[in-house]
Length: 459
Image: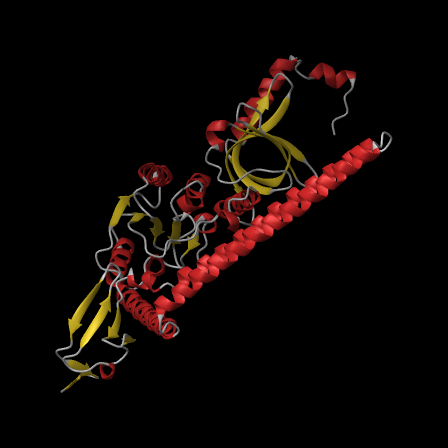
């Protein structure tokens, strides 16, 4: 170290800098010595004001430096900066003359020890999961047999060919359409989002398959974008995601209603096998036919049982009519007796009141009369209701036993003449004998020309 003395000071050329001159000289020296450098450190005090620029401090164990990344450059950063994140960046040293401080202006950033796309993927996945885009209760059931399938994929390559081939093999003539989009590179995200907008505006498809083949994380980046994820989430049409290989998981896979491990698997999940479906329908038709035949057989047996209980239907009906008339007469007689008895009781009470003139008990007697009158009304209503219900039951029984109800459905009752016995078998009537065929409206006298029993004609 040079010790300054009056003699040495006099020997040195006196060059006096102003603060601005010194700061400018330092600025020129630093910016020329470090035009572009790589730097690594830990992010702290991160800020992103409304201007869109990044401001933060980059530090290590022993030092720190102010860092800036302007909006035009940070648009290319595919992950979110946050305090505590270790990064590497490319930038240039700059001196801020008004404060006499220096900083580094960064033009490129990447996470240290992990790829930028990978950390961007993980950050977006965690944020969308927190927002509820992966919730199972939001997912829609894939239709068993869609009327039309829309493919959002590249129009060329093996993916679209495999999907169409498998779908048409499983279910020939299934209506399908292709909405051609880029599946990687610049413009892919906007084209996929636009395809979903068009399909949901038209609403003429029952299923969307979003597909592409395998690739690197960078190739699959459009399917890890927030724009595509939210388009899938807001789609009113069910979506199958079939992106990459079985081991590839994209953000689109988590948001879609169903994830297929490969595009070929998506085609198999989209439609059933037509031949198997036809066999299943045929089996169900046979089962339904057997059930209907069994039901008809049971109805015929029930009809035979009912017919056997009516050997003389006219006499049974007449007996029921007489029974109903008898019940009506009894009810009328009971009502007359009840009303007459209560009238006499009321008359006796009235005469008793007149003869004794109970001045103090007038209110009490009046109240009792009102109670008796109310009870009489309630009893009459109750009796009428009971009698009506009983009559309804008898009427229902009468209707159920009425053979005319059966005749109205096209059945007939045949009786052998002249005895009038019901004919249940060809043996119950003589050949060339006469029978009375009772119809729903009228009857016919017929002559027996042939008798057939168990497919054999009886002579």
